[in-house]
Image 1 (cartoon, helix red, strand yellow):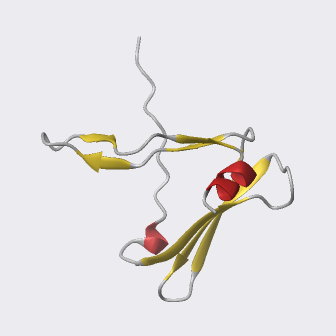
Image 2: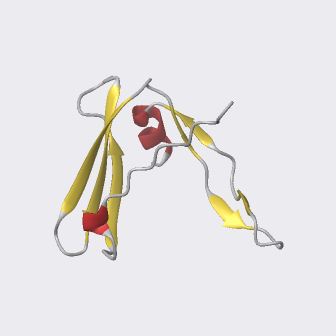
Length: 88
């Protein structure tokens, strides 16, 4: 039985650009979808519309002594609104 390969979408137009700001936002209060906006230093932006359940997780990773990625902080989980409130 063959195992299906995972899908990867590479956006070639952004290769080599420097990111100025990355935002995860809800289009309206308690929306089920979200927007991932990437703003570049050259003034252009990329908007990714994400259809999802209303729970997100953010994990900060850093390299350990063996060079492997490992969690650096406790993960944050919740809606975009609750994650935004937690940063204040």
